[in-house]
Length: 106
Image 1 (cartoon, rainbow, N blue to C red):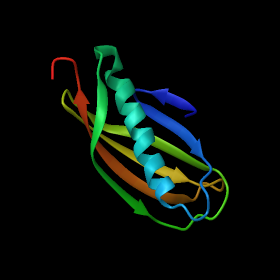
Image 2: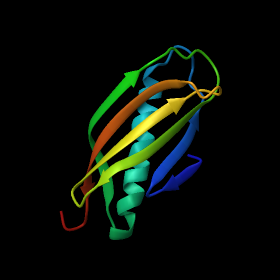
Image 3: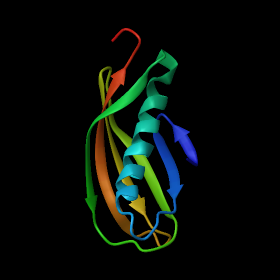
Image 4: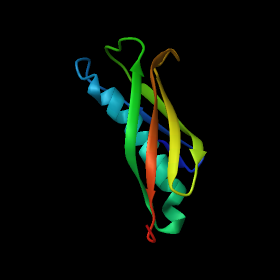
């Protein structure tokens, strides 16, 4: 993780050429960390309940950047979108993650 904020999270990953699931996992992880940061002041954390990832182009080598941003941050649920780009700023994958806010009173 290179940046963790309530209004967006950023990370860099360097996946192996044959491990495509790493890309989808990175997308979900970055969104989850940002969503958890958004409810941390309340003593809570976010848990993913749905993840949809679209893989748009192959990636064989090199570092990728993952940027996740909230679309909606409600009391019970959050919706985040994320994009993964390569060093040339080409979109490799995009997705959205819906998360449940697990708060102390829930």
